[in-house]
Length: 400
Image 1 (spheres, helix red, strand yellow):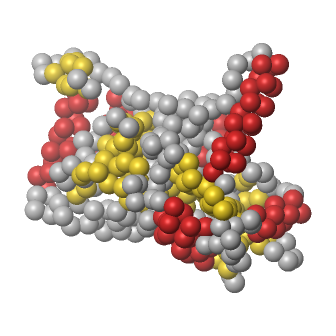
Image 2 (cartoon, rainbow, N blue to C red):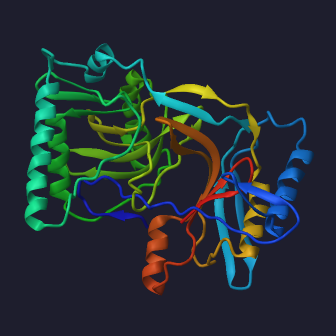
Image 3 (cartoon, rainbow, N blue to C red):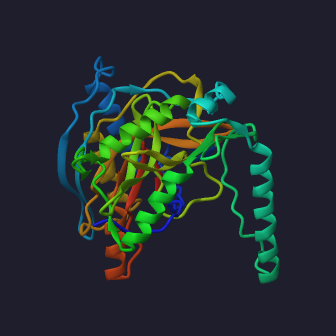
């Protein structure tokens, strides 16, 4: 079961590990413009991908059937992986997208996002002064401790601008036209009081269960409230990665962690420890039946600059064959004890020349809490638990 201590923290993120490899043969492969000998694995991958192209000719624009339950064990001997997942429908073709800061965001939209209940004031200078004072306070502590700076800058795109509005109770901020925040101070205080009153470990909700949470105000009801709020900033949908329900006799609210959805495809969620050099579009919200108490958005507000020519997406049948190939050559080291319970098509994110490049990837991963429990029981952290595969070429992009 997924569990969490009641405390207000940004989710931690796991650093990505890029794979490379190979050995002999007459042809050459090109990885990031570095020539190397083409291996038997390269040839096997190419054969699988080519077979997909041949068998699916003329059908690339049709979406695959969704809701397929997959239960399979791949690999052999001591290197096996077990997949127990429901595979969602995916499009036959997708483009790699280039995104930038949303130029449409302005003071008028921020005022609508604030949804003021009284006189609106610009408190940008006050906010920046408070942030600078906090930086100086932390720097002084770091200097006394002699351990270097503890301030971590979150990378991203944007123009570096800040705009902040308040009506005295509600606050709304735009950062660089890629991120933002909202807070209803009085409603957030109710949420904090409820969390403190509960004061115990909570179990995470099944984010795929439409009726999760309270029957009179479900998780999906809370998400709908959140989307009405975010739609003002042009956010069409979000993918819930984690959710928790806090309830006392007099008050209840949901805590949600999420990532943006672009053209129906979620941007890859991030797990574990964050790599400070990477960009992670993600968000965090507290929502009650009374309304949205708080929202924080990091690199979520984007507009599309360009889209490359559409390319055919590998079916999950082909993904299984490719995983089998990687298990065979040792690129993946897995265990059968913990199932890979999620397999879905996502957009991977790379920061290039001040813009975000979104490319389609298959994401296959275990439940992180189950993996952590397994690692704690066995003392082993070597087995792979999270895999990102290029959804066009079949190459392993990231393995954790």
